[in-house]
Length: 545
Ligand code: ADP
Image (tube, rainbow, N blue to C red; front, side):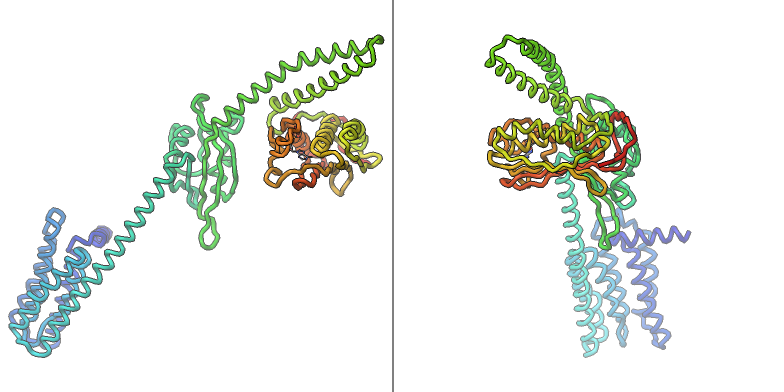
């Protein structure tokens, strides 16, 4: 019962056009005024007495009138009646409750704006001021009360009308901004989601609705971390709850480019690259997160096609290369060849060897799972491996007119895949030679630091600009300077080098300045590294110098 009353009051409060609640307020104030007069010993005349009796009757009448079904202007009649009641109260030599005009004035301003203020003024003069003046006469006090009551009623009415107009204007602006925001979000081709502090979906744009339909064909509950047809980069492993981008974001994690596939059907599924940013309130507390889902399906499919193509082409190239290599070796074994022919065949063999390395690189890049190299590690002398690579590169370095210096320990034992480690040194050395103009210098250092082995290959060559430095380890990336100078290369050596170093649990970095040279630094940890891929270990990992 109490609750019903509260609900009804709340509804009346939220519906300013319904006059029942303001009428109740007016009636109570009117009765209070009359009551206080009687208590104060005033002998009520006919006018106020009639007003006193009519007031509760009018309020009861407001309860039965179906206001919602009546035209908008109807409540104004009630207000005229109220002002008439005030007019009746003033049919007394001592005057009446002229100040009560403020109540209907407030309501008229609130509901009808400036129009309401006009009605207030006219009705106050006609129903309150004129009867009072006629009955009491134009005495000083009566005149002053009449004028003050009219001015007060109109001013109050206008003031509330102005406030209402401003508030409505503000609400309209906010609503308009919200719609503009929604329209902008819907025009972008990126799925956008906003989560609140509890991980609930606050809003999402149209594009993201498409992704949600693909990922959650049976429906989505609107909370972060739900499981659906969402797969890892390999397109096969389902993403677990704690790996879901929305779950990570709801835990306050910020990340870029998490790659997922959504949808089970290989024909319609999409690849999405997801980024997340945290939203914080004024006090820096986590208040939610914004996620962007970029559709990279075309790029991923193009990559697959390219990798398949590269793999099959390089595989096909290997067979004829092996044959050329075999037959030139056979011919070279003959004793009766003139020196000139031997020299020419050696050139053929060197180039076949180069081509073979290139094809091997391509094959490895295309076949290998991204960044993973299969290792066969054993304990070996890194100093000896580096020394071999340096000696093998010496003729090329001298031909290029470069100075070579190296600083190596006598022996440095460590657990590595010797072939792969030599590949790292060869790649870095051959780059240093390729990208350093004649007259420059190349240095190779191998050293043992506190917790790691460090290989440093330094040159005084063309260097790498700041913009390119982050990309040189990406597949098929070449700096513009290298391409402009027509220096041969396909942009695979460093990505393979990095994959080998990563697989040994180490890291590679580059410091460089355009026109001044580059320093590549490879770090291999001394403790047993976290290894991915096949790892055949002959000995326990141990270090000796
Ligand atoms: P490639 O040398 O076959 O182009 P890499 O992957 O070895 O491929 O190198 C990628 C790019 O990095 C090169 O094309 C070149 O622009 C730049 N780069 C690598 N090493 C050096 C270096 N020592 N000096 C200047 N630029 C280099």
